[in-house]
Length: 81
Length: 336
Image 1: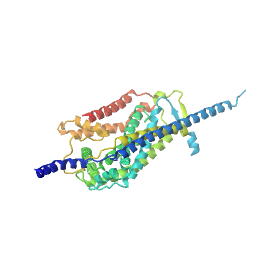
Image 2: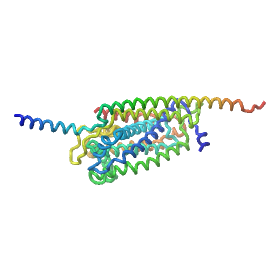
Image 3: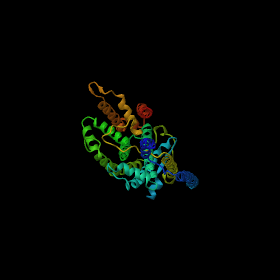
Image 4: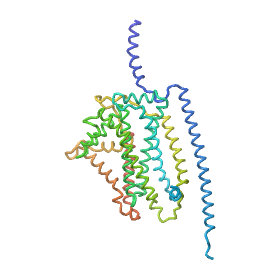
């Protein structure tokens, strides 16, 4: 009986394991690796936000200087009278 | 160069958001080149090994899954933003004289990007990609006169085989990148030569101009960072699947669909019956689609009014029809 059951078990488990083998792990399988990936993703977004804020500040400063320059140019225009 | 950088001015108005779509495509192309080069080190362009080499890249290489996923999602994003760029150009009439060649070169770049997508998809050598390429090359074969030759040229024989894989690999890694570099260079040169187009609705208004260096470039950087974040997030959370290895003798899998940018064509083909007036329905559909694409390609040469700076509601309506058709058919194709 044990032999019959083990043969039946093998028969039913073989297709199941074959199917499992076909499934490809598209991400590293271990939970530790996955949590590291998600943590890195969060840090990546944090770095992006910091960089955007820095560029935005730099852009504002540039625009402010450009406005001052254009005003100075206006004041330096020679008047006819 | 410094003088050129100082003199380059960009108009600022209510519709200037669309200017950034071109820069986004350029940025995504850069990602594609870098990730593509990394993947090419490990990919084996031989039908017996191709699928296994992709699985090895994903499962055995350090960060291989990420590079493949980033290559996939950046490609999807590049094609999507290119469509947005083309439709924005179409609806804002930015193609009008003297920018006809910009439209022509941009349109060619879109076609190349789509062929990049198809050839790259096939490199997986899985059953879905195999079926998709069989349908796509078979569709091209239905074109009258040149169809048979195009089909044989793309397939490298009568049917889709390992020869097709070799050809698609050559297209994907050498021929298409060379054409892309040349066309992007030409496109950018024309943009510098003609300057940014101002929409007809903004003409006559007092349009402010700001220097490209550094004002617009800083804005470009910010947008590129956001795009990079989105693409990296998609690559991490939704890595693209790999189906079963292709078997040329097996029937196509059920419910197989082409990539989203082919869905409108796929759906159009479904609208036509098998035979129409005694002729092959698919051939008629392919001719109809080809004529519609050719008309869109030559649109700047037909739209005389816009070239003279006058409003042309007819061509705006044509642009809207094209856009609606593309969007509706893509959605219908996706959900059916």
